[in-house]
Amino acid sequence: ALNNYYFFQEEVLLVILYFLFRFSARGWKRLWKEAVVCLLYATIGLMMAGILFVPNLLYVLGNRRSAASLRLSDLFWEPYRLVYVLKGILLPAESTQDASAGVPWTFDSTSCYLPLFGFSLVLTYLLREKKRIFSRKEDAWLSRLICFLLLVSVIKGINAVFTLFTDKVYHRWWFMLVLMMALAGCKVLEEEKEKAICKGIFGNALCILLLSLSAYLFPGEGEATSALYRPVRFAFLCMMGVAAPMVWALLVKIARNRKRRDAGEEETKGIPLRLTLVCACLGAVCTSILAIWQFRQGTDEQAMLSAYRVGGQLSEEDPQYRYALSDNAYVMSGDAKGLGSWSSTASNALTEFDGLFDFWLGDKRLVKVTVPGLQELLGGRYELYRGNLHEASRIGNGESEAGGAIETKSLSETEVLQSFTVSGESYYV
Image (cartoon, helix red, strand yellow):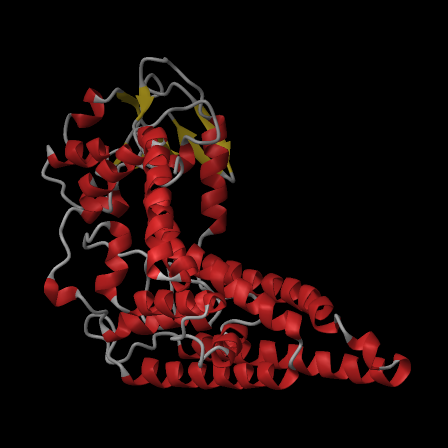
């Protein structure tokens, strides 16, 4: 709740859903009695947490990222976005800045892939419970809740409930779906029924095959003819999603046969759980390495490292004034203070401030040094240059964000307050 306002309200809604699915099979008369008691305690709890919950609601409703209401024409996902949602369930996660299918890039962090198994164990559980999903049996609540959450995931209009029906629809509530999927997977592993698990593994492979065909056939975002943007990487992720649970099942079968031959049937119990621990850790390491490698592609690591080193060299000339730098990389590692600002719970007042200068991009911040006079108004007195004294280029003038030209000028020695060298480059304040 303190780190990101969206999560608190989503937790409240998910607890209500859990209560309804968990206890509805006890009968409506008993449910209503328990609901009244639960509502009473929930009201007291919300009043106690009101100091957090009320600002949460006000923030979400007032945030320009989600200021517009959801339109009736947007009740369902576009085909390419649906591919992206299903990919997040069936395949390992990718870097948000470069996706292989569905959406080219986004910061929505859409992934609920279970390490090693993906959707295979969940599918095994749902196939086992298929006759009980619509029954009145109390212990069938988990399968019903998972099916409902999966339905919410693929229908935009219902998914929007978690963001108060605003036009920015996130899947941050998927942490609840991950918990329920993990619980279903644990139940399947405890029973150790090989045939049922194999059905789920092959069903998972079939789902991935259908996803691949959909990504290839559906049109992509914008003018893209296909929702498949990185075919080689997508094929590799599909192979991982299909092969990982199959390799696990093969290792379990080999270990069981060997143990059965040496020590008897009774000693084979617990082998799936032990192998799951080892294989899941290895799988998580492999997918994490893949995501990190992908994230680092196209990134100038040396330039980023140089920026942090330069920031460590900058000293505070005067506590009343700041450096005219919008890039936080230069002002996070030393004593210098800049004009940039970023937080996952950035105040709505920031977007209102940007609007004073006709800057209305809700998901971006105004580069302060691009507005004449605003830099000085905010105390941005010191400027950073790179190069030589006769032709130095200014750093942090917002050329990348604003599309302007890089500012160069000739510096006199009397203007320079600091000078130092980092990675062979000369810098002047």
